[in-house]
Image 1 (cartoon, rainbow, N blue to C red):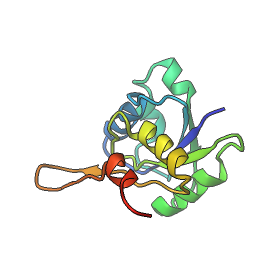
Image 2: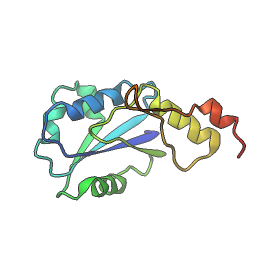
Image 3: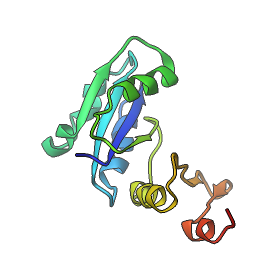
Length: 142
């Protein structure tokens, strides 16, 4: 049973973007996950991006093809295909990456605070930085 199903809407024209995103998934310190890649009629098929992965990594990924419905439609298709045994769903856009402790922090936060959802901190560049540490949240009233 996977604690997380990671849903990745996929529509790309350039090779390497999804591969970079998946690399950040497989670098997670929390490893109780499976991945659904929703190929939203991408001009670049998702399978091209999976070729560089090893067999163990590929075995944890399911590709679902659908007629183009945009990222929201792809996320909904992902939700419709989550295994009933999955505890939590995590969304990752195919052109984004996670820091190595993202899933660990999400899992711990959800358990600690009994939350229904979790938003991660974002670090896009030196010019744009936003971070809310769990320790700060734990100390906040309410």
